[in-house]
Image 1 (cartoon, rainbow, N blue to C red):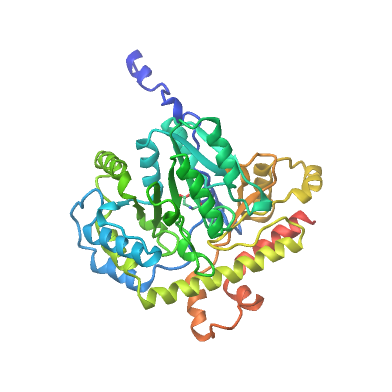
Image 2: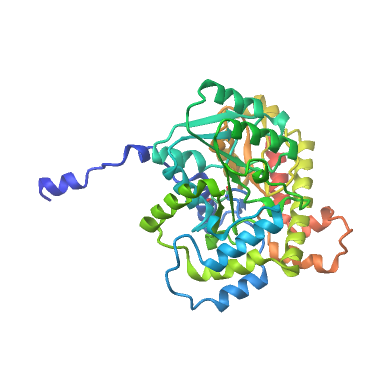
Length: 432
Ligand code: GLU
């Protein structure tokens, strides 16, 4: 090899990605699968993937559209933009023009494009989803974490946001809120949303409202923040969580009319990066956003299972002495093991990553440390995704059960046995 080739092979990375590791959610899934393949009993509570199948009418629409092979417009298939606009009108009572809708290959990619395109600091509560901050780091934006507390259900308080703005009212900022919240499963009241919206509006922040878990609010009563700050809020959603279609990679942003310049700029970047979102998937997504009785029934059953399971395991963990909030939506819990700090320290466990690493090693239960969600490493919090069960079997088994029948422990043991076993293992591990 001559000197020149040698130089070409030198590690020469963009400084912004030098420290970048694979995303925690993706990495824990890969590790869990690898351990499973090697023959270990693994309880996959790491990646937040819907346990439910794609609803049949939507799967059927995908089969019917397998032949769609042309590139589509970068902003999305017209019928899909229309279906999303109508869905928005039905759900939130807000008029949306199909031109305000941007379709992308997953809302994660759209979030990255937004952060790249908008030139402002990223403001996020802690805890919040694993990828908002790394995306800002890759792009080179400043990040401001605003701390939240267990006592407030882990939600950002309006005073905290106001305090930040007070420091410098001139800065351009992008605030990302997410509820029902990944990683805690808790959601915000309408009053809370109103107050946050007022602060964001007064301070002319752009608000990205990540409502990807809206339809799996356990009571089906999710409220959007969009109507409280309509000119400055971008709504983010997609098929991954409510439609069991994470691997389909279909994300949706709905923009307010005054932010059309931002939509257009993101779309221009889209033409230079992904060109257009998968055509068959977009055709099938039209069917998903049209909803109808079959999809409504599917959602009702999904919520029923998630609610019963989430509450049951939160109660179990609380009974074992773990600090925990019961969930309002989605499929996450955010247990705080700090009551076991001394006992864990005796076993050489001082921080949340070591705690999760040892838990996986000793019990086969895979969960993610709170530090992946912006919490301090010393805080003994972790995120648990209660998704390791066969969602198809669970919702099929509800066919013969009256709506009023509570889903008790024997149902959960039968349908979600792995999750219950994982919780038992966690309890035995912290209380040996
Ligand atoms: N949102 C899911 C999670 O938090 C997985 C998808 C992802 O992180 O890309 O686990």
